[in-house]
Length: 446
Ligand code: ADP
Ligand code: MG
Picture (tube, rainbow, N blue to C red):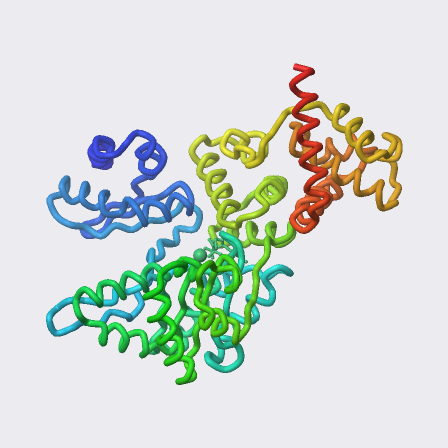
């Protein structure tokens, strides 16, 4: 029976999709009314649940001739882990003529406070979000979260929504993207139901508006949002806004909105440090009931530094790849799926060390010494950073190149340079010059 199901699915899906997601699944149990499928690991389970459950169910039904309930499980503990993809918020307004609007927004069930890892670069944003969740409209109104892509703004906003809905299931918590707000507005104008639109948004107890930078250039949306904001604010309702930059850097944002947005707290989120990145990976892995060797986690955390979404993506690729290829989970085995995110010129450690010595005017002996003199230790850290980027050496081997430092020193050095160059223009310039020199050297030596 299971083979029939597989054959049917094979004919419907592309080969990679079939091999990756379906072929690895096993039939665990078949009863009159239920079928249990075992997925190779929780990631695959999650993916099956989200994307393939329907098509599997259809195939099964066609073969059995009647519908049947399907459960997904992973081998490890037999628990049924599938979680709903999204939770619908109660924001639908049914009107008499049957048109529904605005549309319900969706929350990602994983975006909760308990899954958010707090570190030095998001501590304030987290604390403010939690405080807003506990007592909306009191301390920070509006709360304006800002920070680069993939750093947790949406996660924190939705965590507020989850928190409120858990405590007060009937409260009106509206989470919308700016795009959604704009679309609702346009639809309302078209259907001549502007009043309903206004009423709807103005019943919010908490209004969370994501990616407000997209309001740029939309005069009418700005106008309408200004009034929505004022009504809610005056009624003591909480407004939370997220943006990839501070209000004053959003082009063509009306001054009155800039001043409204700046009335409460502007909390920014910066790129997480190494320890936080490691903690995020560990937490994610623990939630998925998996185990990963420490060096794989460190490898990911040192190579994906500026965007948590990409970090998580790399983790997912690693786990999927390993589970499909059945190789042991080692850094070497993962290399094919973890393409290094930086431009990479492969060069030799000696060339690099001489180059650093030359550019920083520090002797090779000093680079390999334990001296903590500032200029020496900076040169050494830059050396380790570049060696990480431009050679295939492992962290311990890089440590050896620099006179036997241990691998954590190398790791922290790379991270230090990474953080520093974001703030330090001069260092950024030096690094870019060094990269040019490496390029020349690599070209002439090959
Ligand atoms: P943004 O909205 O700032 O672009 P997201 O909130 O969508 O970023 O976050 C991107 C991904 O990173 C999400 O999967 C989110 O769960 C995760 N993430 C971000 N920050 C953290 C954190 N501090 N702890 C755990 N996961 C995080
Ligand atoms: Mg976002």
